[in-house]
Length: 491
Image: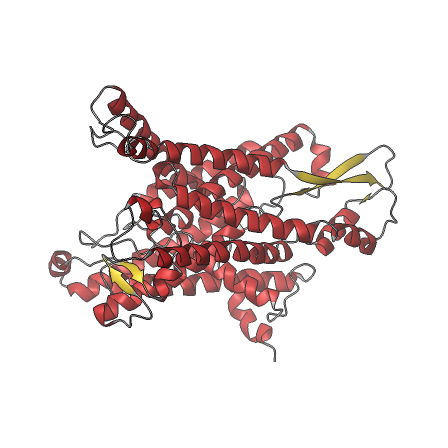
């Protein structure tokens, strides 16, 4: 008996959001999307019951791409969903699952059930260390005494809330994917990063404000000084804090590059085999795999740092120096330091005195080189996995073109012929686009952005928003021309 036969009774009974039986009107899709977004914001502002003051965010700078909120019901964010996707992509890429998700309906159900089961397991495995080890989600002694359940009882209560939050965000993502516009994962990333960007622009709390507008108001009216004019201190204050010109330029540059890269494409001409004069184009974009594979790369780094934080919380200063040396809960030497991503200017600008004392320039250079290599190579590898597992590869694309009744002018109407044409472009563009996105993410982190948004988070937000705009435009076109829905198989 194969593993599929043994697991089928469990996987086929996993709760699932029903697909719409017919076409969902565009306005209703927008309502579903807005409703889920409202629930997401609501849940990120619900503090965990029984949580004591203090505690550190174990995800730290990864929070902008893992969504959720520290100390809230959505503590784990989309982390378990992304981690489960990484595991399934690796297993599927190595053909260890033996599932034909393209043609076999049974295998499709098993794959979806397996993904949900993995998300539940990863949610529990992520929530447990946060609650029961270290000082990440400390339980309140007062609440435990008041309820008569002690600290252990409060910890179990917090664990249950975090676990339920992980399940909620899983089904919220599924609702958006089936009933709304775009994907829930992308929507939550946009929501989290947008909050940080708006805060970085408009936050105002007096002369110590970190918001860009508030800082420049203080500079222009003399409330905030930059030091002696045209000195090194003056230029440094202008570029970094409080002027933050470099962050503004980096943010605008990332916006411009991503939008431009999304518009760069190779368009393969198509014509309809039966309808004379019906023509179209299949676009192979420079960022063909989108920026979403970057979530997988950063999530892998986040999981590595998560393990390091857990080990340090248990071993403290007795932790082997080869693994990591920590100061203020952050690695400053050892393995976990060198594999930690560059998150801000303070991680590498030793020549301006921004990095912590005791870290040599060669250590910083090695860390930058490892992060850059990991992001560029990892971006290319995960882009390939993403294309192959989401039906965007040459073979799957050729079948889609064949099934739609289209063909490439000058070539025989044959899937194998179309596949060979696609192989000239898709694999190369996938690797180049994935490596380019990885490079942009590292550079954005190194230079800094408005609101201290991570480079990957900013890239994801711009790219997902651009694709969301394209999808909304496509939905509106199909609403105006119902025959197009039948052509693309949406009805």
